[in-house]
Length: 373
Ligand SMILES: *Cc1c(COP(=O)(O)O)cnc(C)c1O
Image (cartoon, rainbow, N blue to C red; front, side, top):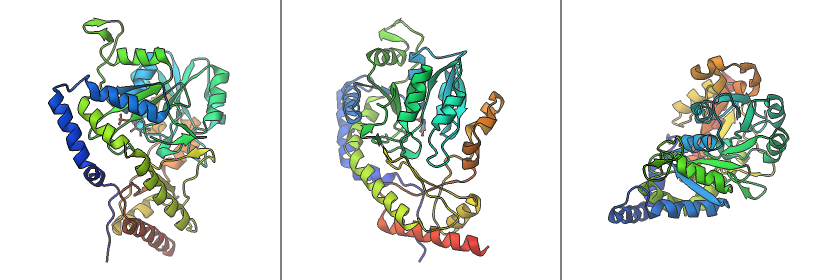
């Protein structure tokens, strides 16, 4: 009677749109243009519209999208950039990659989003920008972050890699600060069939600079104006993303339905804490992350019952090897504690009702077993 539920199966989503993807790919092969053709331009236009932003600039991946914006602002050696203590490691790495120093801001105990009070405490004379992360698909309190940023003259770069379509007071993430960085890594809410990313912004100058930086600093071939990099969104991925963008709202809605069931039906359980979010936020559930002081035991019990889980993320950035000597470990106690408690349950748009039932039954049974010792 056992019903195994893998943490994630991306093939179902790909199969659902396979016909459209094949014809999109045919269009690209027939065009003979694989970099810098019409698909990228069309996707950029469509994604900017979907976000409500003036500009979208495609990039090679989400990490590059973050780094391109920081570079575009001239942030580098000698500068500090505030980042959440709890996030996917690319947020930190992108800051370090331009030569700036990532400075941890602790997260809110309840929502796990960047804590504005901690932000206030960590802003200093070298601080140039802040990178709020809409972690797990839950928008950060952007009013609180915005107020501190304004007071200290900081630019705001939203890391929206996990939150395509999420909204704060009805406004799309990525458009709530000065720029937003998106990843289209396959596991994201809008995922390519490989690596891809994008920057969105209303700032004409930043959009222009980003575009120049991403092609070796050249506006015109072979005539660099700036020290640039190579980070392009390619035609094939753009064509695939156009197809999937057409499904984003529906797939986010399906994620929401699953999340609601979990929230309702697991609310009475001991040993775990369910996700919570600011009232003004409309999350899109890239991940459904519960917390438990007995995370490792729970994870093992679920694994034995065939329920796949993952941990996002097991170690706070301040405790990872590359950042161990950067100091400020003391500044992120909530993030560090959370890292030992987090557990992601299976949640994606193609999780069947039977799968959802199996997950909930599994969690319930695992917790009973935990309590029996
Ligand atoms: C996935 C992710 C990134 C990086 O995206 P890539 O496309 O993998 O480079 C950055 N930040 C967060 C929060 C992410 O989840």
